[in-house]
Length: 302
Ligand code: CP
Ligand code: NVA
Image 1: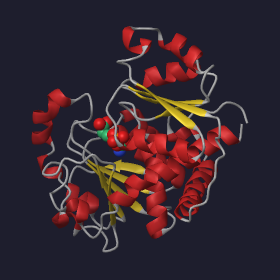
Image 2: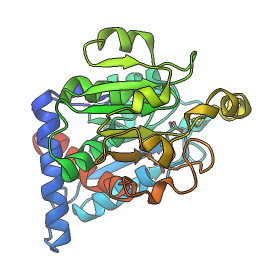
Image 3: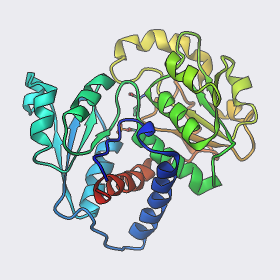
């Protein structure tokens, strides 16, 4: 297989995405029954993180260890990247030493530039625009609880942010209907809405949006890098909190997801993570299994 990157979900075909979700479910089963499976023995994954992370970092590092490989966490504070070494040069050098590179950064273009200069697979661990690894886990989780998501109604409540953009890509690839419930001025990227109008719509009234839905998803109101907008956003999003009363509008068997970390009292009420519809802890765990399936896909088919 030619060199493949994973910068957005659109780097996968519909079939490949489904294949990775199914493989993640299998790898989870294998891990639970104690199977030793080390397809990445002697392989190294570098993790360049310019923003904080708990789940993404730990799931990639654990996944590599379980696969018999190793990982290197590279904080810009300690590398020449943080001192201005050009991205192109860093990509050329690092990709001669490791087998894959995971990057969490701000501008999506920075990730694209890195990938264009890398001779090994580059994985998006979150940018300002997309968070595709989270979607692998979310789609795995829905599949485990409810089977195929095709034709289902999914409602995104809150900011039209990186997670929301990745949900739009998922709606197109897995054929579900996505309704984005956000305040005016906080819609997802216009171009993305336009190209996906067959499966995505915007509804500013959260109750109408959630009505009859199969899955309700939210995320923080101010993402990493938007800290100074926190106060203004708290006002703009005040009517968009996901709480048990809002979930009443969803279908009885609807699920609730949040990529975490959550700000209780803001985008969710204090009781929402433990609401009967919530699958957030399985969703978090599935980061591990889904990314192992992704690593295997990118590195073992080569
Ligand atoms: N959901 C997610 O990506 O979490 P982290 O920021 O902890 O990695
Ligand atoms: N939208 C959030 C997701 C965190 C996992 C952020 O970018 O900070």
